[in-house]
Length: 95
Image (cartoon, rainbow, N blue to C red; front, side):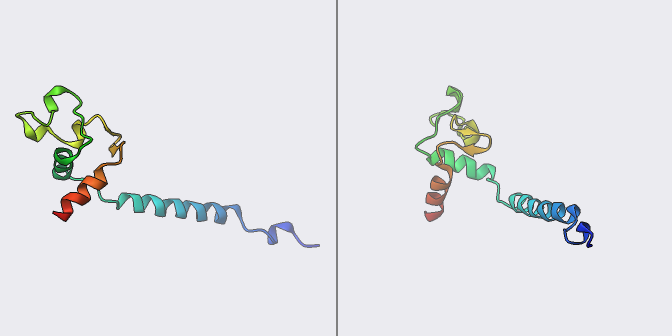
């Protein structure tokens, strides 16, 4: 009679396999490019969806450097909620 342990893979091997897969995904995410301050400022200045968090950060403000995706109501959790960032950035690259 055969021992059942001889016919099954050890649990450690199965766990390590999924762990390696997750580590690969995490490392790929870490290599994703992050927007620079200059990019977020240029995108905000050219974005039709830009809405200042408060009136001090409006596009007509004398403090133009305050205009950035980071000061936009639609930019939350480091992402554009109306999906305009990539579109506007691509348009800037074409100029």
